[in-house]
Image 1 (cartoon, rainbow, N blue to C red):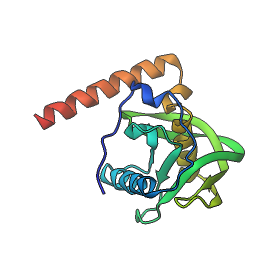
Image 2 (tube, rainbow, N blue to C red):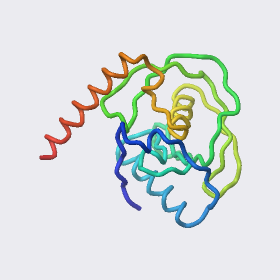
Image 3 (cartoon, one colour):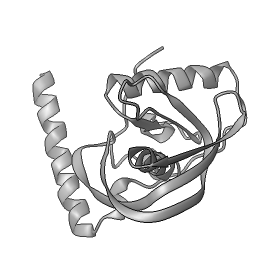
Length: 171
């Protein structure tokens, strides 16, 4: 397994949408394992394939407190939602930027597991936010897109400062 590099906004791959997964082969299994390792290494709760430069419709997540309940979402789609609420949002591809985004309070998602078997997952709270956030990535949408242009500009500036500070620390 390997920790992969996270792609940062405004990389084009984050905006182009994804292609359905059709082959559940060894290469896909390795990619899933690498994505999980990457997500855990950077303390994320979710990671979508575009965030590591890949255009497959694939995401992983783990919102458990113990960080031991990974969920693999292949070709996921929201099939039902209820309610609206403001939820805290941040993104590994937009480091240092956080704001509240209005999302469905509860969602049901249909997806395939890592072996191609269809399943449904429901969520509210953090699980709901994470499911919607990762599916947004697969559709070429960032959480910033749910905000006003002024907030988008402010958060992108904050991201630039965060990235500069990281570079200085590494030097």
